[in-house]
Image (tube, helix red, strand yellow):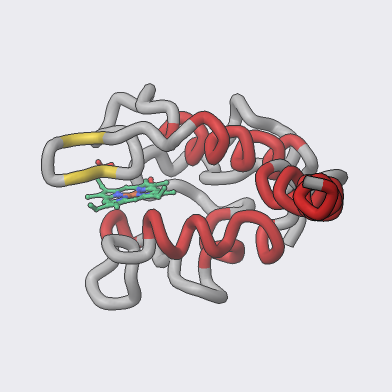
Amino acid sequence: MKKISVIAVVLLPVVLWAAAPEGVVSYSNDLEELVVNRCGDCHSTKEPKANLVLVKGAGFGNMVETASVQVPEAQLVVPGNLEASYLWHKLMGETEIGKGMPRTMFGAKRLPEKELDLFRRWIEDGAKP
Ligand code: HEC
């Protein structure tokens, strides 16, 4: 019993940290793996959907302060400005062109709240690399 509670005390902060990073969210530390897994199949280097490549090493530069192809007057990610970031509206499924992201065979499927929260924090924290 004692052993178990010791393990819990040691591990719990690690588990919580993994679920919700403390401090400023950065793309490489907190978001890139998620983006590659969730988005990389369609937004790959070979015929990327909407011309957007989100594979490892490419996502940050292709989203931050980069114009959308669907709404060229908007940028995909405007550091510190969630409302102005077209990516956010795609994730929330509130754009007029196309569907919400990520798409599936059956239409858009909204990400779990925890993951949306990471995107939100990343943009609000200034979209750090
Ligand atoms: C099953 C394929 C698929 C998946 C998975 C997918 N996308 Fe897309 N994405 C598309 C297609 C197709 C379009 C263009 C049509 C549309 O908007 O529905 C698009 C368009 C976009 C656009 C608009 C680009 C622009 O410049 O206007 C963004 C932003 C985007 N996707 C982000 C993402 C993100 C982030 C993920 C992962 C969370 C993701 N997508 C997952 C297929 C996909």
